Image (cartoon, one colour):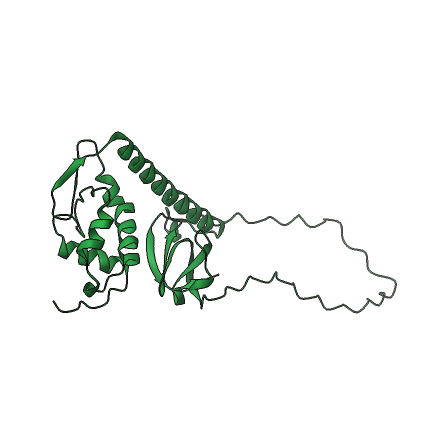
Length: 233
């Protein structure tokens, strides 16, 4: 058997497993609950010639079983399957309850993130539910009426006004400078970090550190694998 090309991400590993074990894994549609201890079966069945390490298999399994698609499939009466699709026991109530809790927590994180983004837009004067041409302008302040009494002519010479002092430039609080991650070995599990996407940086938490890659979880609950150049302290 020829060596497979090196798999660089957990998504690549999941795609490889879905092709290798189609009765167990899938990349789309409904998923099936996996057999307890299936990691050891994978270590036995997937050889080194497949260019997949144990660390990559473990990371791919965590990503697969923490996805919303998989958690939705954890229901009472569903059967766990092994790598060949053979039934390996019915799901227990405690496993169903645990999956429901994970799903609710992930949804709550997404809702909290959306609420925070909407609050920031409102604070910046933006509205998402009304077109710009329909927005009402801010009320104008009325100037106080001028005194009706005529001004008396000035009989004394005007006093020389003191020279105006230049106004000091408004000092802005220095913004924290983000530092790009150059050495992922300096990171720690559970550390708060930034994931750079274009000009924006998203909050994330380090879940796992692998060779050349870091698995993080965004505030939305989404877990993903990123390279060091996309991370910032």
